[in-house]
Image (tube, rainbow, N blue to C red):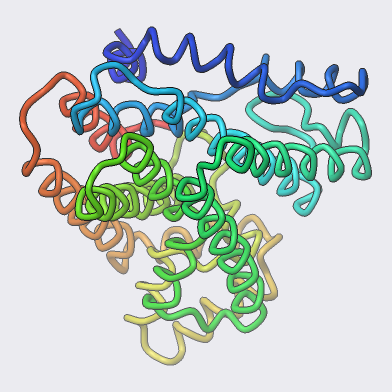
Length: 325
């Protein structure tokens, strides 16, 4: 059995029910919108985010999930989908999860409007049910995701990213949404503030580890997830590269930065950068950081009693750093 299926097993019934509720949450009186949202629903990914919501809620002791938990998961998925639709427009990307993106099929104007529609649906789902605490969790995440993207754009111009700034960027860009999922699962069942904060921190640690794993794929020899060297071509300063830059002499540092800044389309030069980062210990350093985050996340789970939901969350933590794509 695939790991993702194993993780999903204790909440298989909830995930089925969630899919129905999620589809309903996107309904509109505009036929074009319904056609597009139908396309979105049928091309869903692994749905890790709702899985986090349900597993956390169940682990914290709510065996029968309340409607608030389903609404929390739907809000997360609506807002997450909206950000993906907008990201594809911003990045001029015509593929998403192996299918055409919305902007590829319906052009940018419609894609942006659909993203806005999904965002408003997510907000209204919380407001109509007076889930203001859930709304606050997701609103903070959206603000941080926007700030993280803009901080990355600002820093990419100079390539002057320190490790501290790198972690702030990935905390906001990637980790904040997974942190919101875990906090949402706790908050939806009215868990204590202490548990909500513990779960938020747990999600943040997984999100940071997840992003470092993504960075490492850029240096893989086999085609996994994305072609090798793509971050360098896009002038993204990832953790292995930052380590190499910080631990090089002046001459090598200048060569590295010049390569990323001015020769990022030169395949031979990009391969030389990849080889140098590997030799300088950049990959080993990033792997060690990722494993430290994994251990910290598992330590948070240690405090909770054993259950199949906790086991699934442990599997999820390990899957994040062992996945092949």
